[in-house]
Length: 328
Image 1: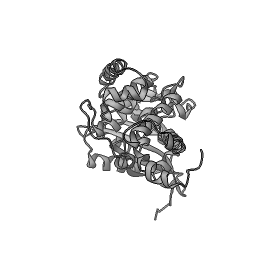
Image 2 (image 1 turned 180 degrees about the horizontal axis):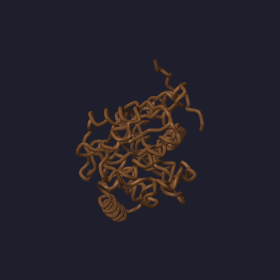
Image 3 (image 1 turned 90 degrees about the vertical axis):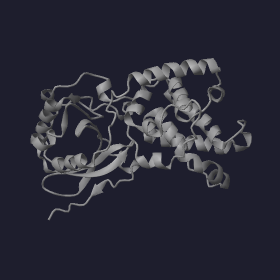
Image 4 (image 1 turned 180 degrees about the vertical axis):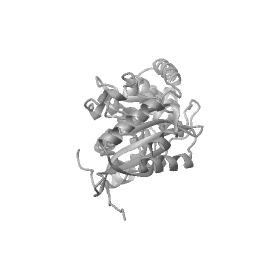
């Protein structure tokens, strides 16, 4: 990635929009790491062409055009990101693990700090998606199932509040085409509402029990927190488990064959309850960042755990990659 230019125009005209453009790219691509790289590239392109700008109005609108087209180019011919439960049936806990699949095919979470800092556009007459909904993991998943252009149109009109006429200008197409893409995108997203661990209200007491029972290894108490139809999804592993009994059987196997000490630290991801999981061997030593769990809860039970076993996420979340061993 090219170095950021030390130029006053860059700092004053472009840098203030970085977070908003990163969030837009994250929604388009489903990966924060990719979004940050593409945002940097888009800002550099804009900086190099400041004196050639042809879009009237705000700098941000011009940056959305550059970034959206860059995302569309990246998405051409590329496999859509997803989560394991969208790609294969639930696995049997008795079958064991296969090899992990490439990280590039999985959706990734993003820290709430990205959403807090990104100044969204004012609601427009066609805006239908709230900020909280538009950053939820379920919505990010649903977006990745759309075609790239449907994704762009839905985000510009229903999330950012752009008029279809302005969206058509950005995409260099017709208003009729935008409206057609928008109709199909809305139908596809609405058909998936609540199907991918869409969270209920945060439950602080349930989160405390989740952390306590996981760290203590009390499998019975932890299992009691799960809804009967709970799901455990664990990218980059393709296997996933459906139902309280299957999850318990899997965790019992892990505890018996791969014993570890755990420390769980609450974090916030995609406006949902989440924890960062650190592990260490039973004999002692520093705890290392292992995974981010994004947790969906409803009616006092955990309905889905999405375990992102990707240590690179810790730096993106501003978390240390190691914690000291503080056992007495």
